[in-house]
Amino acid sequence: MGEKKAAEKAAEKAAEKAPAMPPGIPLGAEVLDRLFVTVQARKGADPETSYTAKLYSRGTAKIAQKVGEEAVEAILEAVRGDKAALAAESADLLYHLLVLWADTGLDPAEVWSRLAQREGTSGIDEKKSRKA
Image (tube, rainbow, N blue to C red; front, side):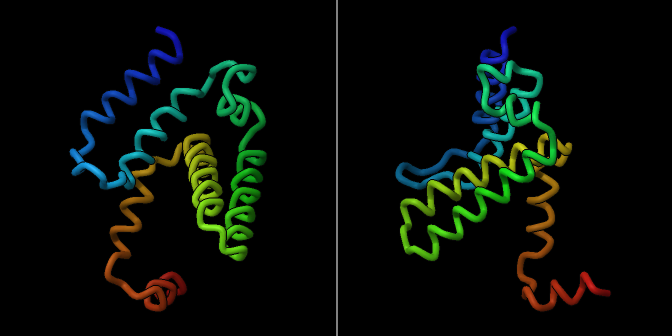
C-alpha cells in the first residue's frame, strides 16, 4: 500500500474515533490527533515529494529549529495584532511541533495527559511543584 493510501486509511480511522461535532463548531485536539497520524505516516517517505519527510531527513535538531522559527513568527504576529496571521502561524507551529513529537517518539496522548493533570491547578502552584 502506498504512503498516501496508508495515510488516508489512518486518517479515516482517526476520524471514525473522533466524536461527532455539532455543525459550525470547530474541532479541537481531534484535528491534531488526525494530523499526527498523517505526520507519522510520512516517516520514510520521499523527501522530494513530502515536506514532512524532508524535515525528518534533516534530523531532530533541524525540526526543533523549525519549531523555534514558527514560534517566533507566531509571537511577531501576536505583537502586530494580526489575528489571521497569528492563526496561520499558530497552525504552522503546531504542525512542526507534531513533527518534532513524532520524530522523538512522543505520543500526543502524553502531552494531553500532562495538560489534564494540570487542569484546575494554578500556574503558580504548578511551577512550584516542579521545583520540589
